[in-house]
Amino acid sequence: MADQQAETNADPTSQTAEAEVVYLSRSVALAARSGNEMWISRSAANAMVAGKDMQISNSGGNALVAGGNIEVSGGGGGVLVAGKSAIINHGVVGMIFSQETVLGEGSRVLMDRPQAIAFGAALGAAFGTVCWLLSRSGAKKK
Image (cartoon, rainbow, N blue to C red; front, side, top):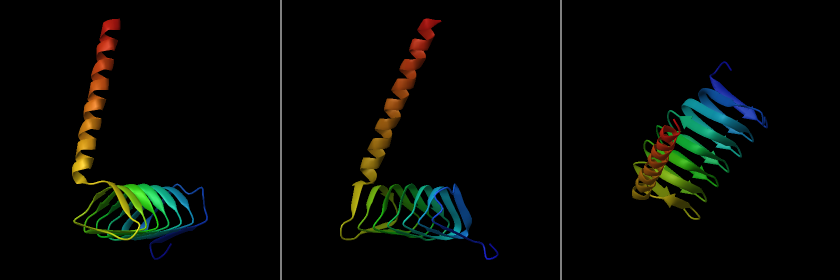
């Protein structure tokens, strides 16, 4: 588009929405990436990345990353990373990493920072142990 905006409406086959400003409505995308701001309504994407602010309404994704603020109303995600603040209203998020977090009514965060770090360490140790065991069993077969 001439003004560097990407809009998708009711297109369930879109793979990636990418532009300076992204508006995603009633869509499913593999990824949504914006160099500036992003507004998402009644949509889902595996990864959403905005250079500045992101507003999510009744939508969700696995990874939500914004350089500025993230505001979620009636949605959620697995991991939310905000450069400044994260505001969650009536939403569920697995982990939040932000300078300031505001949880409104009906909001829930499954893991705080210490729990997320412990989970990552445990997962890394388990993965390392499985790889070590597999390499030992492969060496014995030779």
